[in-house]
Amino acid sequence: MLKEFKDFIMTGNVIEFAVAVIMAGALGQVINGFVNNIAMPFVGYFAGGMNFGDLHVAMDGKEYATLAAAQEAGGAVIAYGAWINTIINLLIVGFVMFLIVKAYNKTKKPAPDAPPAGPTDNELLMEIRDALKK
Image (cartoon, rainbow, N blue to C red; front, side, top):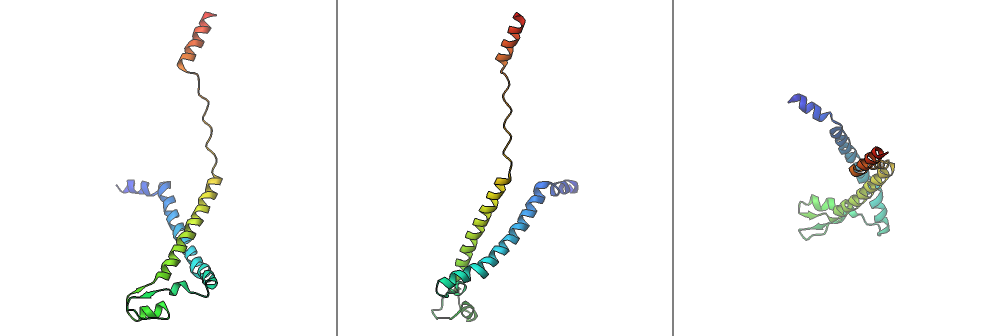
């Protein structure tokens, strides 16, 4: 059983899958950093200096200047600004994955053409018949 498990783990598909998961995690961190540190401040600047990360609704009905202040007060808080950041993150991840798959598909070689079909049984029999007639 241990040998079977070792053979399974060492197959190319499992190793490739593990590498893909690790790369996806790293790519996710890079994109998340891009969204939080570059894209959202840029969008916020053109939205009148708004910080999307601080957009929230306090369920206790009070007004708080920042999301951190509302959370520190201990009440339930709906942080919809963080959700907006997550949606933008998802769109960027989807676009980057689209570009990666598109580039990968361009590098793949087209499938080789199928070899031409040989003569059918009837054609072979007719050739043999004709050869015997000569």
